[in-house]
Structures are given as structure tokens and as C-alpha cells.
Length: 165
Image 1 (cartoon, helix red, strand yellow):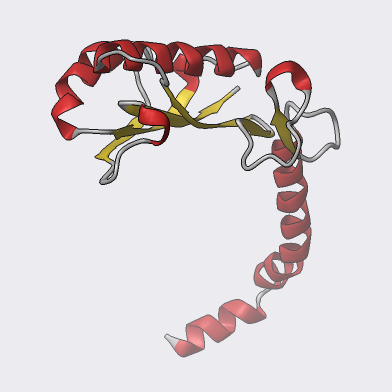
Image 2 (cartoon, rainbow, N blue to C red):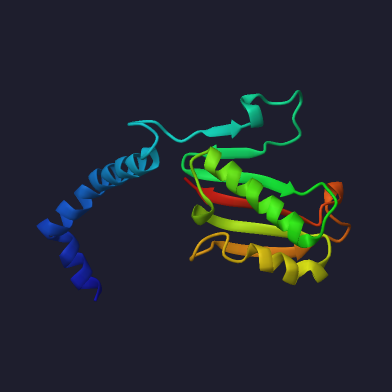
């Protein structure tokens, strides 16, 4: 077996194949750059962009509400800070998610990952009644947890997501 490998390595095709490796690596890197730049202007790399309601960031922000990086969209958790039941809160949050996604050129159907945080796991079925069908026929993956000490601002649910444009 060892002699066969040595004979092969001495052959002209093997030498040509080894010599082509740097050329292939360069071509592969260039193709990766083209894929990375796709949809972002020729030769441009994706960059992080923060999207603020009204276009202006608040003074000394704690976090960003919507961030895009190339064709990826990241939405911060959205809650419902008004009196109501889990259905009303879930409906409000999903409408806000939809509005924020559409504002940056995405949609509910383009959501890849959703995180749902419930104030009380007993609200799981009620949340699902409103949630079902809101992300199209092929919804993204989802994680649902009950937050041990509740959701900030007395919301019964908070939802964040990752989508594509």
C-alpha cells in the first residue's frame, strides 16, 4: 500500500493536483466573498445596522430593538405592557414582531428562530392558540420557557426572533 501511494505521488497528475491546491483555495475564498457580499452591493461585506423606532437612538441605550447583519434580522424581546390576558398579550406581541420585521424588509414567514418567554407556564396553551399559524406554513424553530421571576414590565409573554430578509 505504501509503495502504491509513493508511486501515485510521483506521477504527473498527482503533482498537478497538489500544485492546483493554492489556486482552488483562492477561488474558493473568492466565491465565499461573493456569497457573503450577495445582496449587499458588489464587493460590500455585510455590516451591523441598528434600526431605531423613529430613526433616532435614545440617549444611552441599554440595548438595540432591531439589528440587521446582511440578510439576518435580530429582534429584541417584545412584551405587552398593559392589562390583559395571555391571548391579548400574545396577539399584541406578534403584531409588533410583524411590524418590526416588515420595517426592515422581512416577514413572519422568514423567521428562522423564535424564543417565547412566559410569565407562567400555565399560559402555554393560550399562547399557542394565538401563536399558531402566524409564521406561515413552515414556521421557524421555537423555544418556550417560563421565566422564574416573571417578565419585566408585568407582561405575560415576551418574544424575540431571528429572521432573514
